[in-house]
Every structure is written in structure tokens, then in C-alpha cells.
Image 1 (cartoon, rainbow over the protein chains, first blue to last red):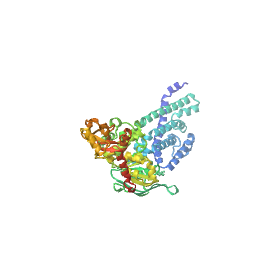
Image 2 (tube, rainbow over the protein chains, first blue to last red):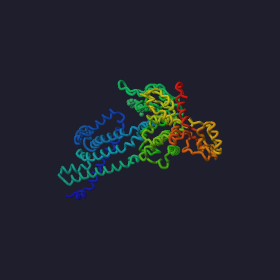
Image 3 (cartoon, rainbow over the protein chains, first blue to last red):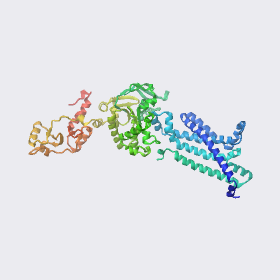
Length: 216
Length: 379
Ligand SMILES: Nc1ncnc2c1ncn2[C@@H]1O[C@H](COP(=O)(O)OP(=O)(O)O)[C@@H](O)[C@H]1O
Ligand SMILES: [Mg+2]
């Protein structure tokens, strides 16, 4: 059976799985962003805290995804969510935190101290300085972190099919189980294509939200 | 007015403690520019940063307009003073207008007010608002950026300006120009300015008073003339350099050294024989020829001998005219270049204001030096 024929027969299912995949990655990215960026900013105020938080996020990163699902299973089983979308989203959020926190932290830290000094010397408060100077200048690097997290999570989400989270990984998992090569190939190609598209889209977004004065 | 009263700043504690400012007391009067001068690491920046509380004072008091800064809200204090730094620190994500508007916006000015103020300030620092208002800092040269930095410091028209080596990062030619522009501006604005510099030339040029520091201590606080002519100790005289008499020439204005009522003037319409007779009688080597109160040239006895015409037609022209406001250095330079030992001096309208000779220059320098060195007075 050719790839094309397979797609023709399973178009609705493919689109649904792709949508599920995007939804998993998108939701977890949103959650990670809403927690990771504030954490990244907060830890710029304390060197000690920054070291601990970054080391912690690093440890999470080193745990293989299959192992992480296995570790979470008994814990989440207590609340009846050992399998399915909940462990998938939690894992994806955890993996996203490191690139997001790290990039936010580095970006804010790397703002030219002369700018911070000038701002403070003119009477800007902490919040105003963050809002008007530090965050706008950090945006490109923060977005690069989001991009890394998104592309990485598209791959990890494919593995989440093993805990019943759905998504394009289903094709790969079922294809392996049934020795259905075309099915595996479809899943693999679709995941790769998704990663490429998201990467491109995020690059465009990055260019779009970078303050104009930084592009000169 | 800024009063430093026994101000001490110690960074760190225990063995690592560094005394950056050591029991410093002096006052910057209203409308005056005080330059904090001294070698790198002597505590100039620290003292400046304590003034707007970017650093906390360890001991002592800083009063601004009579109020103890520690009793004021730090942010309000900073909003009331302009702050200009060597690194300029323009926000790259904001336009030039946006950068200048930072403090007015924090003070709640309305949009129209801010816009007209931005244009006014750009004009003041010689940048065309139409061209530069909507540009970004990255599109400007270093000199232009620092002009914007100065405009930003002046934005809300503060009475006090704190400047930390504001022209330090600009190439020498541009620096000279921007210093001149700033002096002209300050002549009108009369701000009270604390200005950090490590450059003696800049200090002499910009300062009403110079505060010289060494290892956090104030060594001398005085006018540039006094610092040059009467250095408090060897450290100061070494710092100002062996050529300090030459530096005084750059500081002294011609109007302060010239003879405002010269006797050796003759009118252009007078006859040569009469003038010659007068010059010989009074033993004058040179006379200035004047027409309608403007200098037309000079005559000397040799030139007038056997001549019958009017001195106006016989006079030699001066190769240069000297303005009363120009530094004495320029007068001396003209004398050396043209081998003429006396020049007429004109006011802003080109009318004769006086004359200056080599001997007068020498005398005014000796006078300055003799102010409180009576014993060494040379007559
Ligand atoms: N934040 C700081 N922490 C510790 N030491 C400092 C700090 N700022 C300045 N110093 C020290 O204080 C002294 C004076 O520094 P500074 O005021 O910057 O000198 P200047 O501006 O005259 O070059 C130096 O010895 C410097 O190392
Ligand atoms: Mg300094």
C-alpha cells in the first residue's frame, strides 16, 4: 500500500491525530510559558535561587520521556489519570520549562547593565523597567526558547501515544504493533512535517515581535 | 544646590572593605557646574551615584535643595534630576522621541506637551526633529546618541543634572564640539551640574568649580584658575600637568587680560606727520588706527617717516581680528604666527573693546598667580 493511498483512506483520522498532537503541544507550551517566563524573570533577582532552579530543570530534562511517563504513572494513578492526556501534558510542560526558564533568565541577565542603570537613574521602578526595557529586549531570546521547547515537544508528544495521549504517535505505535510500514512512515513523516512547520512559524513570529529598534 | 556633608562610602565589609568616598564635604552652588576630577578609581562615580541614591551613603549626609536625600523617596529624587552616563544607555527598543519622553511620561505630562518638548529638546542639541524624532538609537552615530542622552537628561527641565563622563566615549573632534554646544546650552539654562571627568582639559573647559579627588578624599575644591595657579599639593600639580600656565591661557578670556583703555589710538583721518610726532614724543613703538570706533590697522614710526597722507591709508592691516570672548591662547597664537606683539580686540558688534599685547598676557598670568603669593610677586 502506498503512502498516498493510505492517506486517502485515512484522511479524517490523520487530520484528527494531527490536531490532537498540536493541541497537546500547544496546551503544554501555553502552561509552560505562563509559569516558565515569570520564573525565569524572578530568578534573575537571586543568584542562589537561579542556580537551584536551573539545576532542577536540567535534571528533569535528562530523564528520558518513556521513564518520566513510567515514573508519573503510579502517582497520577492515585487521582485516576495514570494514562491519557494528563500525564502527557504534565511531561510536556516539565520538558518545556528548562528552555523557557533558561532563555528568559539569560535574556534578562544579558540586558546591558548600562540600560538598567540609566533607567534606574532616571527614576524607573522595577516593574516599569521590566515592562519597558528588560522584557522587550529579552523577547527574541525568550521566543527562541519557546521555539526549542515547541519543536522538542512535538517529538516527545509522539512518544506520549504509548500512555494513550493520542496524537500522531498513534500511527507509529500501532504501525509497529501491526508491522504496518506505511502507517509508521505516515506517522513519522507527519510528525517531522509538523516540527518543520512549527519551527518556521515560530521563526516568523520571532521576527515579528522583535522590537523594531533591535532589527537595525 | 547640592551639599555633601562628611560623606563616606564603604563597599563590602571586613577585610574586603573598600572606602570609595572618604569624609567628603563641599557644596555645589545653584547654577554652577562642578567637575569631579581625578584618576580612575578615586570615587568620582560613587559620589555621583550617591547623589541620586543609586548607591547608599555609608556615613554623612547629602542635601539637595536643602533636603536630606535619605528622607526623600528615591524615585522622586531621581525624577527631579537629569542623569547622563558615558555608556549613554539609550533604550534600543524605543525611538529617539520615546527615549527622551521617558521621564516626562513618568511625571504624567500629556501627549501634546511631551511631543512639543521632544522637538524643542532635539533642537537644543542640534538634531533636526523632523529627521531624528522617529529614528532608533542604532541609526545614530555615537555623537548624535550622546546628544540625545543629554536631551533625555534635560527632558523634564530638572534643576540638577548628574553627568558621568558624558562625552567620554566620543572621538576627540566631536567631543570638543559637543562640549562647546553644551557650554552654550548651560549658559542659557544655568543648571546645577555635577559632572564626572578624568580629563583635566575637559574639567578646565566645563567647570565653574573643580573637585579633585584622590583615593576617595577631596584634595582640592576650587575654581579652575585657582586649581591651575595654586594647586593644593604635589598630587594636584602633577595631575594638572607641568604646562599649567599654558592651560591657563586656554581658560583666560581676552577681555580679562586686555587693556580696555589703550592710549595708543589714532583716528584714521589724522595726518601722518602729526601722528609721527606724537608717537616719538610719547615713545610709542606702535599705534592702533581707528575709524568709526573700528580698528582698521596699525602704524609704527618707520612707516610714517617722510609720509604726508592720512594714517588711515598708510596703516598696515591686522591679519586677524580677536574677539573679547576668545581665550587668551588664541591671542598668543596670533602673535606668534604673525610676529605682531599687539592686537586690537573687538566686541560682538565689531567695535573696538580694547587692545592686547604680549606683555599684558604675561602680566595677567602673573597677577593670577600672585593673588595669594605676595612674596613672589614680580614687577
Ligand atoms: N559596587 C561596588 N562594589 C564594590 N566596590 C566598588 C563598587 N563600585 C565602586 N567600587 C570601588 O570603589 C572605588 C571607586 O570607584 P568609582 O567611584 O567607580 O571610581 P571612579 O569613578 O573615580 O573611577 C574603586 O576602588 C572601585 O573598585
Ligand atoms: Mg567612574
